Length: 71
Image (cartoon, rainbow, N blue to C red; front, side):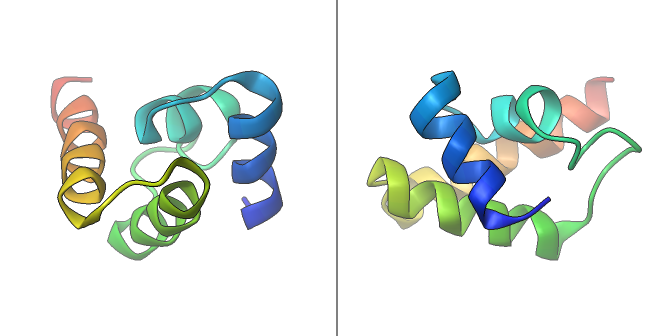
């Protein structure tokens, strides 16, 4: 998954959460947990697009982590 896919998901597919981007709008999470570095990179791009602060970024990453624990 590249940054342009994340931007596209937000601008054109109405994705508003990191979980939506990772689990539904891109293939980033299709084969299982993509790893912390990939989540952080994806969250950084999303933060720039959505205006998330550091606390929101951490919340969004935690929500994806929880989705993999539950799933």
